[in-house]
Image (tube, rainbow, N blue to C red):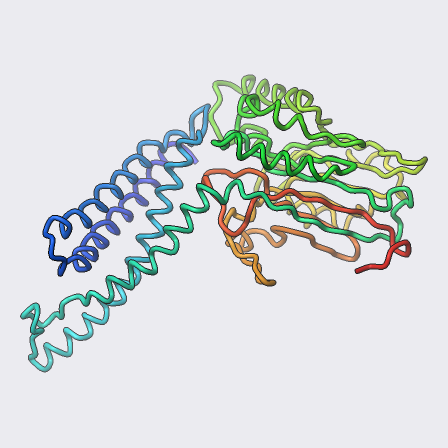
Length: 425
């Protein structure tokens, strides 16, 4: 989208937000109408109005970050996150208040028909009941507090997700072989190095046989990872560290002075994978050997429905033994949906990321919901189709919204097991 298009969208959203401000302001005046202190009656609604309008104005002023060579900084992400927090909170408040006002409208029609005036307002239109404003505040407090938790705690609340997968044709030497997967680091968004390091320590503590990273090291530019190379280079595994590119790694979402500058940025990012100690797989494969037996590790560049499609699976598979046990690293799960799961090459396990689980949703007591499910069929966790598995990592970092709520940042640990050797639990 061009800069003008972004501005138009932001102006429309800002206009809606300002309408919400007026409506909430009046609702708060109803809430404080019977307070004894006149100063308090004035300060609460007016204070809200000043803060909310201020957040909207700062959000508007920062729209240019979407189209510059630098992209969104953590500051811009915080402004966007605060705007979203206020916008959703106001939306809930307005919906409750509006339903109450609809009731007032119905009552006004009845009063006009019966020629009965409201004893408080002395008009046919009844006064707004304080109970409605109280209910609006109570319900609006849930998204308000939830979003602030997401921004201050949730985005660094790392969770270990463990999966054990059983195969008939897994080489016996690899029975019990463990893989730690990170995805979607999005290093340009970090704003708390100590909290981020806790996630790295958690990943290190798994002491897996293999470490893989499945794309989106940065938001846009190679320099974003540079301050954190000493941190993420701590991730080591006996059988190596391997990585692929994600859609954000190509620098397609910001402006460059030239195609040559953009290409140089990608080359620099590839060098940073080496600096991290990761072997970047670009439509290629290699063999991991243990006790004389081998499995094939395959990595493709990004291929995603609606996104960059440069990955070449056929090229990556060229020379792979058709009977080999195969693990594929592919950033976008739609690649698995469209090209991998029915591929004659029989790829046993695909590791992906990309979706972040929308950084918002519910995963409690068997209930799984996120708005991202309306965009992606396979958006988080383990998927099995005729013993061809896909695992979608929920992401280590965050992007745009500087928070996570319900869908926490993830470190994946997968254990490969051979059927017949151990009972399947």
